[in-house]
Length: 449
Image 1 (cartoon, rainbow, N blue to C red):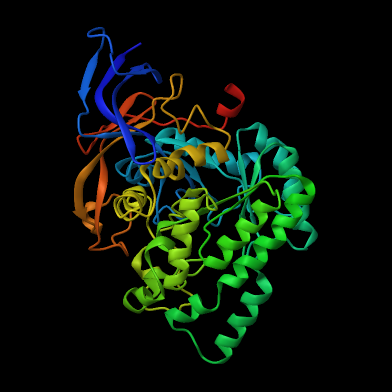
Image 2 (cartoon, rainbow, N blue to C red):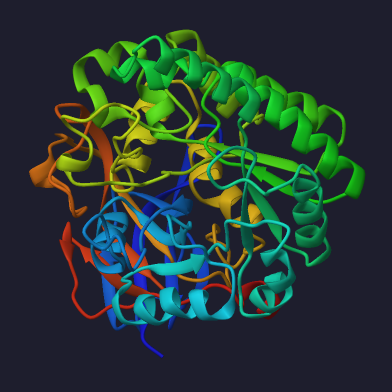
């Protein structure tokens, strides 16, 4: 097997501390992490002095591929963008096509096998009382996460459907990934705004308050606690939602949660600039929510950062009523450099916490740790070598997602990876794509450990 020596990298060991050490890679695995590597026996030696070696990022929530929406993103463009941002494993979340049986799963995996340049998983969804009967087959086929909505348009037909899905998925040893917003609050507000003639961009954000998130989280947490089932709350967007996650954890619920860069960066003031381009769901809240999310990320209430990457062409966003505009933005490439910059460099989280929320915890949530999300010997050689001083202002022409815009235009971001390895192969070398690398389906790793 080929052997690679990554020499003299800075490796996080706790807090903001690092040690200088070398990583030996044998084939697709990490063989050793040592201060005194043997002097020969390598096919390649990489000088990593001044670079921070971290386990490759894991994005457990990204809308990468829907066969009817390849003009938004696809496996090749989406995973290339991920790789340039240091992400080595991506979990594709359902977009509009339900992933509810083996046939729909196959439609995604077959294309990913051909086109994905990083490792990939596929979440099932949207789950309800009817398609839950297929969950066992999907789990055996390697699905680790099952998406459930508490609100329109994808929620189960009945309230009992929430309990049925959470219970069944938990019994299969998988995790229910929950979009948690209370439908009664949202539908009431949307009706009021429409009757008042509101179709401006802010109407969408004002119709989805943090209390709607909190109410739904409290509800699904109680269900999960009763059944002893694990749940994961996706895209936590507000202070009240983070508080609800904290309450659930304090009561012993098997609950984890993620937030996204868009909620850590933007407030409703930014909607005045970007209009419908910044329409996302859950909606953007106020500056007090943004700061509450950073605190929750730092203290462990929120476990991970994910992208909720969901781009669309401009003409599906601009010039439309906010109720008709596409909801979603491109985020996957700049996600982890932004957490590095606004989180670690600006003192909101430690370097170790950066590693935890970008890689270690996502791997644990999906049952992949320590094969993924770790630099331990025996772990898969998914590694990002970050240059902490490599900074540039974001612009659409410097990013690699498919659509031609970014709401982060002009923001200076540091901590870009110089090199990225996937399963021991360089997919990014000196900030250039290495053609020919293909990722692997991660669905069987839990059973292989």
